[in-house]
Length: 559
Image 1 (spheres, helix red, strand yellow):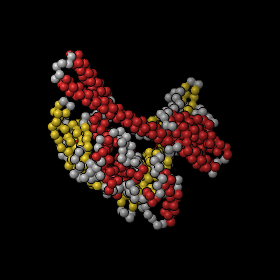
Image 2: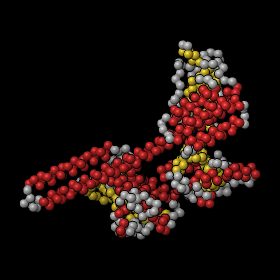
Image 3: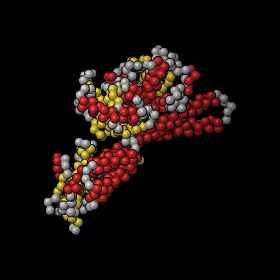
């Protein structure tokens, strides 16, 4: 979709006025090179996100309202849209965060437009808040009923309102998403068709989503026999014609004993120009639809398409919440297991030291040594149990051979994109350094440390310098000589106060009013899950701020 964002003709001025006053969030943002800066911001965006136009213009929209879990995907989508011309119809939803911290699920339409003044493409998005499915149901219902009141008689109005009411109830139920939301919508479509047409056809909805071929939606009616005309053929005709398709040639479409269906009607389910599915209805009557019925099916089908999209979005919301919950649960379990395992290791060292000390006292009775051996054996067994439990919980902690320089660049590239005017990032990492680590856990740990450094520098002096360096050493690590990679993360910020150097690793400790105090505590657990360690270097950073050092296990040669 190409167009000039600044024209002087009256038509464009009128259109801009409509967009400013529409109950839709309409905004424009620049490219990554310009820091994703917001260029335009209408009243609908102000209402949704809580930022006035003056507050929003020039701000990085990714940092302003995109939640952290979706930022990487957002930047990737932004790049594809601006650079490659990819468009997103009303088929994606994002959990954005407004100024007051409220999470809004926004159904969006994103595309690029040409800025003639800057001579480059920019990103444009139109969004609507669908957080409250019940409220949206009422809005859509009012919109549909308004359209009905402008055309058709009272009898038609009553029939379509009767049909749409079934869909309203299904949409309202999706305020609490679950796996059966789509099935409820399909059954509501069937009930709506029955109430609207005063008939009882068999209803089946074929969906056009990410699958290569249409798929049959759950909640469909079973056919009593094989239809004379295959549903695939009906679908193909409907797709090509993009209009109501009927098979009614005075021959039974399905004949199973006394159960006979003489006709079939297929109605495309569109949202705008996008085909979301096809509703196929098998009727017993040879002439099932009147002219008025055919007119009713078009708006009803559009409304059904909206309900199907909302069901898909509700299920996507549920999937995201489940994945986030599982990821957090998994990380917490791993962190706890490693913490207990580490404590078991420390207990074993203490027992060994105590045993050596007591052996110098010959007067101690033999049972004391026997009891010490029992304690040592119990601690050893506890460590083995922790190791076994950790191995049972390895989905996100599965380790592989990673190039350290590339892994670090993945994390710092986001800092360079988001804070290119404030933070200078430098690297001195040999590209030949490889480590054994889980890519996910390493990225999470690095991101926590790097984000802490950046926030400290920005809060103290608007910005600064971030430096990452690495070197390898040979050390005895967990009972064997290994190549250990020491990765230093230094910043030019205010550093860590002496009284806080030990407390920063405690859960809940923070020096920022808006912080939760779990970042470094969580980071230490993540690095422990990698089989490594992290420490705050005693000496100040060469840049004047804090210096954290990660100890990571190097990859063995040839692996």
